[in-house]
Length: 242
Image (cartoon, rainbow, N blue to C red; front, side, top):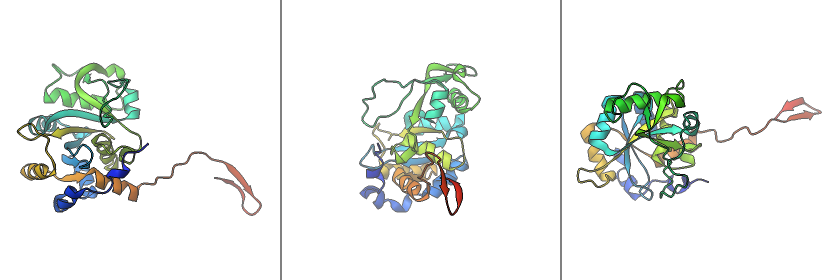
């Protein structure tokens, strides 16, 4: 079941600020070059902006920027395949959160960290978690990094920051994972698009939207998958695999 269809078309606020919103191609290029960016979901959904960086580019400096300026919860978005490889169960057996936010148990790198909460330690945990050579034995739970399980199909299935971060990293040719952090205003309220524009300008960051990413994937993805092969014999063309 998909919740992305209602969020493919930008809302009125996104249209009003369209001149400061970067194209998906620009956001992919930012990701490819290891630069942080902001992703905004639909105003009829969470209506939030997250700081996003591909997980393999998540340095201690990037983590510290998120903690200092984003002020939200720093999370690691991973594919279901990677979550399963690390043996991470969901945080709750029955997810009753409004948008089915797919938290697993929190994690820590088993080696190379101290308290686990410092920017260095969280960057280390991210690095270990996304390393294909790492296994469940390399991860301790609970910890100070919060993995999120991205749905297979990405933003075409769920129009959330979790899926968007994984999609952007994959489109950039990087490890399909991301580090994300919600952006809060100084007074503790959530930063909406007009607030995010000023934030982006102050920190020289680009803003992209999940609505645009959904539309981009509809335009560019090959959405037909091979489900089975069958040999067909034709009197005109011989044997074919279809």
